[in-house]
Image (tube, rainbow, N blue to C red; front, side, top):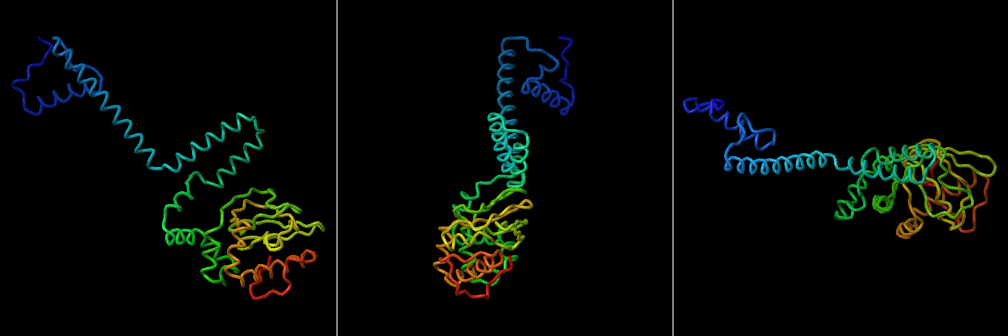
Length: 285
């Protein structure tokens, strides 16, 4: 056919360039090159090459997409999680201001990345787990006099039982009169301790609160409100007592601070709180 170029006498480069062009046209399903298939053999070979090419092309796109997603899987996991949250809020028809607060909470709590931290730490050996937790809480330890002056073994035992939490401005972290099940350590932020007499005490980075209720097993003696975005670590009452059973001297440190705070707000110490405490570990509220 006069439309088919005669390339017998052309150079090696031209011949293979034309062959590569024709093969890529078939394999990528773009066309048939400069000449459509004529005989049945050409037709079947062309269809076979198109099927193989389409399969390879789909596999390439799939692998490329998976590679791109795996480069930042934690962000992808966060985005997928937040899409579910958005659908949940839409399903329940939550008001706009509540949706905005939830959005801001997720942004501050996870900062665009989500990890299954408990599962990750659970797979590690105890020394590695303790090393990671000590590193993650290094700022908390550095800013807190209680930890700075304490036995390193006590610090490690305490840190391994802490749970990270985030509160927004205006949130009541503790409400007066409720049964206390946690105490809190402030990594970053400012909270206000509110009492019946309208006394207000500010606590910031390196302070802790909520220990009075855990020591006395009674009800909360004051409310605590977050004034800023607060990044806290919570400690449950069971873990609190478990650790202090091993380190009774540290119980005295907590009791000292508790007595001082009760004195500041004009409250009488409950019967369960020892009045004989050491002042060497006291901490200014």
